[in-house]
Each structure stands twice: as structure tokens, then as C-alpha cells.
Image 1 (cartoon, helix red, strand yellow):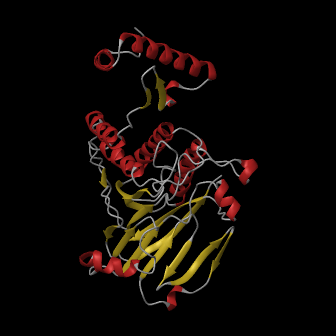
Image 2: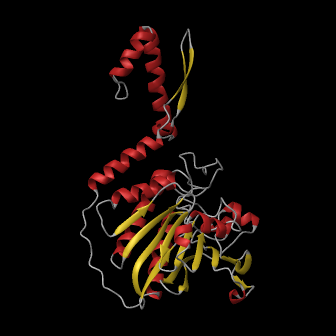
Length: 370
């Protein structure tokens, strides 16, 4: 018997096919495999085929992969092998600050070719830009006394949400690698970054649900949470809520991808959804992604915005009374064919923010990457 034939197959054929029909099927199956190998078609990529006999013409389709079940099993395995770490002793600072790192819209797996779009992008470039961006920001803030780091995950960390190379709603995407390779490379890169940040200060990881990878991005963060489950120096918020809040001193930080509630509604949502925290704060900040370029608003009035390589400041924030700012962040990802055709371009960059427990956001840093 061939390697692909097992006892379950044998029982099925005994119940439903004659010996002649089975031999005919075996011949066609073997021929299918031989023909696929000859044509250079991977066997694992064959999802369905026709089987024909004297009495029947059968369309056979393989069982779909249960992605949720597979990821749930992976999460449990990661918890079992999670490296045990001891709590690191932290210095007590006189002027402590919070560092917020929000690597928005990395789009691991996106493909952009220089010939078509003027820029190159794939998983290798994504990993390099992410690491270079983090290292650059850490150099900018090395003179500050960092007592806590917020890392925002999700936010279109992955370019697609299925093995069919589409977004969550089914929009086809140009991809540089298979989904599994993309997931693995993104996971390896994120663990490298998180391991480095943990050496500086305790980390709080916040997951943002997003439109390209609503499910795969969610499970990506769940896998990270499982991998660090035995590490007391990092905490996770990976709920599926579309908006997350972090209270730090007199600051209330809100996080969302930026594709759901309108930005004009976010200040009031912060005041109502996190009213207990807001009652103790003087400053509110929303950090959003989705648009891949810088936009900053207050009282729904535009303060500053990127126009390709130029940032225009439109208003003085001192004239605005409401203390809640809404900020869309830059992205390190390349410009793919669709965005290039539409003329949507932005200079790739990673952004970080410093917050004083008493004075609000005291600095914004941008690391442009190549």
C-alpha cells in the first residue's frame, strides 16, 4: 500500500467501493501525485480533486484547517515550555517616566517591489525596520528614568488573516511569504524586542484588534502572552475589546486601531468607558494606527498632519481647552501596489512617547527607518 493510505481509508473503501473501483481510485490517486510532482505542484497545496468510476463521479474536498483549534493548542504548548524568569530588581527613580511604544501597522508579510512601487518591503525588511526603530528610540530616551514601558501589539502586525492571503473581510493582498513563515518571523522579532525592553523596565503589553488580522493578530498576541506566562516582568492585556485604557499618574492613555469608532467620538468614549480613571487624570491621549501617517487632533481640531514628507502644524494646542489628544501614528511598513496607485505614500517611521506621572506627555520621538 502507498504511504498515504491508512486503516481509516481501508475501512471507508471496504464499505463503499468494490475491489475494481478501489484499484481504479488507487491508480488515479497515484497518477495525481506523480503528475503533481512532475509539474512542480506541492502535494500539500492540492485541496480538492475529481474521482471518476464507472458508476460515480465524485468531487472530493479536504477538510478545512481549524485555525482556532490549532492556535489554542499552540498556546497551551507555549505555556508548558515558557521559560521561567525571576523578577528583576528595579531602581527607584527620582523623576520616573513612562515610555509608550506603539509599533503601528507593521504588516508582516506585505509585499512591495521597487519596480512597481518605488520601495521594497517583505518580512526581512519589516523585521529589520522594527528592530532598528526600537534601537533608535531607545538611544533617544537613554537619559530618562524609565520606570514602565507600554508596548502596543496587534494593530495590523500581520498583513493577512487567512491562508488565502486576504484581510479579515476577504480583500486579497500581495504577500511576500506563506502565512506560517510570516507568523514565525513576526513572533521571533517581537520576542527579541520584548526581551530587550524587559531589561530596561517592566513591560505592559496592550493588544489592539485590527482590520487586516482581526483573528490572526489576536492569536499572535495570545501566543506571546503564553510564551511570557512565567515571566513576572511583563503583563498582558489581550482581551478582544476594541478599545483599551492604561492609567498612569495623571495620564489616561487610550489605544485602538483607528478603524472602528470615529476619532471625534473617542474623547467622550474615554470619559465614559474609563470614567473612574478619568476622574483622577488631567491629561488624556489616544494612540491610533490604521492610516500609516501622523495626524494629531484636539477638540476635533487638526493640530498637525503629515503630507508625504512634510508635516504641517496647523494650530497651537495652547489655545485648545480640552486636554484629550487623538493621535494617529506613523508606520514602518512599505507602500504596496494598491496604495502606490492611489498616491498614498508616507515615510516609514516608528514612534515613541514619554509621559510624566504629573505633567502628561512630555516628549514625542520619531525614528525614521530604511
